[in-house]
Amino acid sequence: MLITLVILAVSAVFFALGRVRSDIVALCALILLLFFGILTPEEALAGFSNPVVIMMIGLFVVGGAIFQTGLAKQVSGSIMRLAGTNELSLFLLVILVTAAIGAFVSNTGTVALMLPIVVSLAAGAKMSASRLLMPLAFASSMGGMLTLIGTPPNLVINETLVEAGYPSLSFFSFFPVGLVCIVVGILVLLPLSRWLLAGNADKSKAKADRGKSLDQLVDEYRLADHLSRYRVPERSALRGMTIGQADIHNRYGLTILELRRESGAQRHLLKNVEQQLAGPGTVIDEGDILYLSGDGAQAKRFAADYGLVADADTAGQPALDFYDIGMAELVLLSTSRLVNCQLKEGGFRAQYSINVIGIRRKGQYIMDSLPDVRLQSGDVLLVQGTWENIARLGNDEDRWVVLGQPLAEAAKVTLDYKAPLAACIMLLMVAAMVFDFIPIAPVTAVMTAAVLMVITGCFKNVEAAYKTINWESIVLIAAMMPMSVALEKTGASSLLSRTLVESLGSIGTLPLLAGVYFTTSFLTLFISNTATAVLMAPIALSSALQLGVSPYPYLFAVTLGASMCFASPFSTPPNALVMQAGQYRFIDYVRVGLPLQIIMGIVMVLVLPLLFPL
Image (tube, rainbow, N blue to C red):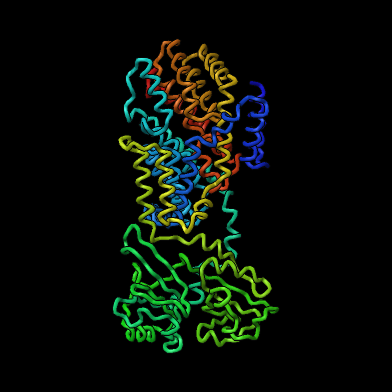
């Protein structure tokens, strides 16, 4: 028992100092428990196969798909129309919406659903996401107190009461308690998050400012000003021709920036979009959409000659998208062999399958007759191609320097045509987790949704899906789970809970209630909330019966202490889910979560006897 407590204490110190990554600390603690024979290998590794951990992995993928398809941005846009950009309004709306969802969906599922939305919301309001993400995680736990099914400890105390011969709690027996939790949470988190989390501004902001975004490039080179979009109908004379045969550039002075092929109706769930770089050998087919850059009158003449149909996006104007094809800028070095050569001699198309669509020279923009332009040292070339080919340009740093981070920009591109499909998959996952008549376990629902997001194309590729998983949080939770087994196996948790509760029981009913709450709250820092509730519920029940008072407030103190666990990132999966996105350290949870946890306990010790008379 002593060794286990020492390992736990040393781990807590390292977590608080934050000088060693949390997942490494957790793994070291796990290895020590194995080394001293406190846990068997099977017990130590059980956390890595725990359904909660597997579910967290799936939820990271689902959340990533919500981001990748732009669904998060769409939903956050709707929320912002309600709250505006006022920080207080956004804070309250996030807390209330999250708590409402958390009343019916597991707190892990609630955070996974809301996390990408809240990050987009913060970006739209130009505020740090860290101001909202920790309150988001805490609100999911507080919302779980509104209903019987909101959190597992609620079901545990209900089962304890029924087994002891008391009437079962109703679905909304918890509602008054949950309301008090939400009110206290808002009043405490509002100042704490502003004072203590305001410094957690995105550290990547400086990096993000390097280079230009794709939209900035489009605006700077005024590509949209001379952009036309035409669809090739069935009887068009252009059908079956190659772009080289059409000789569009020489005859009309136009440049084809992109050839797009779409399958499925405009709002079809299984709609797919394929972008192709326009090369001389590209064959034009029926239904293809051509993006033309050049004089609008010439574009209309070209369309009339070949029987093309004007085509606009849902906003009514042609716009460039960057699903498969992207853009970047290159600065030509003085040592490059391309200096003083004409652009057509550069071999961009032959060597890299890249098109040069603009040149910036001393503040001037050259967009016409590009093949005959003689390149100079310092010229900035705007190139277009697939993201993979643009990435290859970085291998020739003796010729040019690639500005910005094209692959980082590629990762930001949203597959917005997949948003309806991602929304349907997400809603089906939530329904399977909420409704008991659907015979699917939550972990199965999440895993199915994650796989569907991948195979239906809500990610650019499988690698993009894997990159959404925060392995530090996964390893942290999986490695700390066996600690609860060690505490129970050595009798440390049982001894601690019984000693504290029984010593306070002799003082009076209110001190005993406080003892039950804070003992449960303390144990939840190291043991899962469900396991803590299972351990503490019978102790609280027997203590209340010995004093001859109602067991209801004591059992509610158990579920509250088990659920309101905010002072550690590994107390609950939601706390771990937001850790990386909010760039939080272990000490941030202590600074914000511990005061909330203590204040919540004091308030509840006073309120519970009023709601459930002793």
